[in-house]
Length: 156
Image (tube, rainbow, N blue to C red):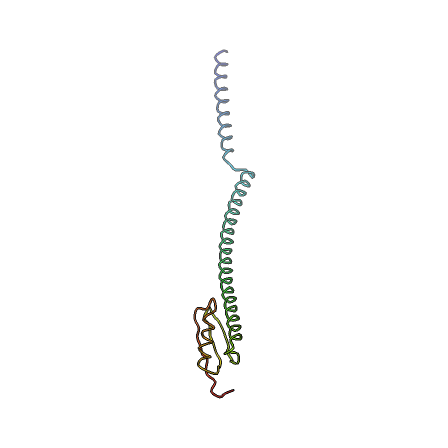
């Protein structure tokens, strides 16, 4: 009877060992499968990565647009600064012409663009033309003077 018990125990041990092995294999196999939590975690990770990329791209675009706006403001400021400078030059020349006794009766129109002064109109003599040019050239900020002044020969 002893021999039967030993064989029975040996086969039981083998069966137990096989069952344990099967359980271990099944346990390992089930660990490899993703459950809903793992899938949700991976989706969340991908969503976060995508959001980070979009934020980075948006930041780059915003910085680029900001640089464009800065450049535009600088250009407009410089242009308006030039306009103000030209207006000041024109005003100074008109004032100087009005304060010049020999030019008081003259009809002189003054315009300035980028520091270039344009004189138009009529005066009573060539000396008045020369004096108007001289007065214009003596003002700060004047780069050059162009004259289309003419001598009024009708005596008006």
